[in-house]
Length: 535
Image (cartoon, rainbow, N blue to C red; front, side):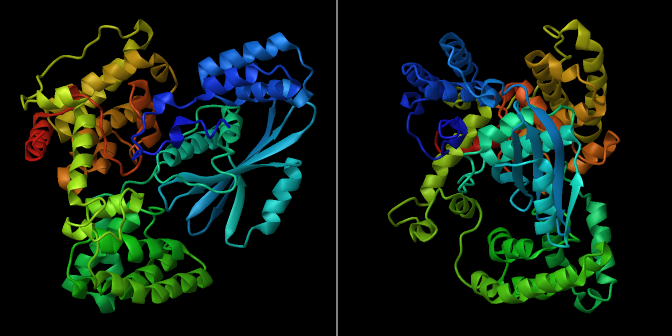
């Protein structure tokens, strides 16, 4: 019931006014009208497993006032003991299982499994709970695992960070991941995760620098597998393969799997890379050589290499058919993949058939513009005046975190000066102040100021579309300037929430909902699009 009424279950394409739909608080009041042990049991679960504060407060008061005798494990759900936390990972890195074993009051055992899919964006795609002792379940897991899957202890704080990060990312995916147990088990899994200690790092995807990918390409073409394919076209096509291999799926270009091969050939390349079919037809043999090269470098067992190469061979006919026929690309392809439009509707290609045609994309672009600046009024009055070179707004910053904010500010200013410009420095100062006022606790925790500074600069860079090939600033350059190996995505996630924003999904449009954080260049882009759409 909690999962069903979770606002995260709402479709972004459902324009129904959800204010009239029941929420968890209404469910709580409905249960409260029936004074029975069964409804007391449900209310006790709401107290433990919901993060809806008003509903939880009402449920707690109702249960306390009734006095129904409940089973010990249910009456004392807050008194559980975490036994151990494990992680199981496959050598090719497609996914992992995080396992949390707990003992409830009265001696009952419960073990939570969370399946995290890295190919789909490091998201929680499934999860469930099992009864039985943790030792028994661990033995079952190890016995059922194939030789290419390893099981190891995982630090409890790290387990919590990974679970919460994967669930938050998965909850923003549309259409949502649904199995016979997920997201029905999500509230219970989140409840167990909240019993784990904080302080974990979570998933940090490596940011490959241009120099690193160029070096990898040179090593490939100098290798036995790549040398016979070394042509100008192959070098250009390899750039696209490495773009996918380093930025999508597992993010490791040395560990291709049958799943990542399918994603590349049947979706990403036909949709993402605009080129002649004759050029794109060179991808399968080039990919096969890259698989051999990468697997040998990373020590992948030979039988897994053969499985992956077999996938390349099996998928090649469908790939060649896809690149040789009319297909959706760009925004229409993304919307079709999300289920927002019908890929079989010819109106998508001609703009003239029933259903959603290309003009509907303008409606979505309008919504993106409104989100970026905070609504219709802000969009209509938007101008491209440069942000001023203004000092940091110290008003409202608690005294006990001022020293830490000063450390972060110094690093943030220097990074913006080195890699961006004065307008970005002002925007970064404004965002840092907003996060500090919004949740000062974030800056009371033990953490390096460099990670906060990198997260702030990265957030401002993304909001202004200054990162990557289009913007000219590499995310890796931000990390390198601050002495880090990669952008601390979990820290950025935390700061966005502290500043009152929804965390950003990987690959999603990054918005801070106000022109106060946008440079004049970005606002000029928005104005140009606004005027083209005649808003």
